[in-house]
Length: 122
Image (cartoon, rainbow, N blue to C red):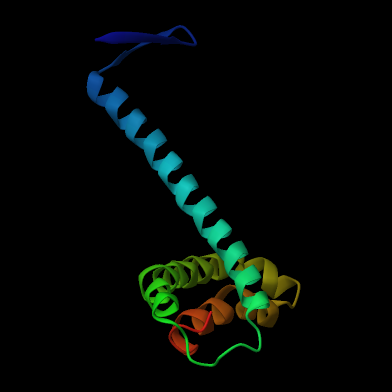
């Protein structure tokens, strides 16, 4: 058992407390890696879309597989997080009369990307 001295108060810290702290740090690291990976994938996706404009309309099997396995789940997460961000930002957007643009950016675009576009179309 370890002791922590903080502001003259002696607190007992158990090994369970240390494990919980370590788990929180690991969760932050994991979420950071997921977010950075998603942003990088989005950046590379934008470049690939720009380079394939005007190519054949039928998507390849690899494009469909990456869409189903990676991009759609990330789009769903983006839709959920965007909806939560929209709700949190609602008081500010109401005051600034920008609800429509916030809704379009945070909710509608991720929703359309995830659920409305054709399968395999990047």
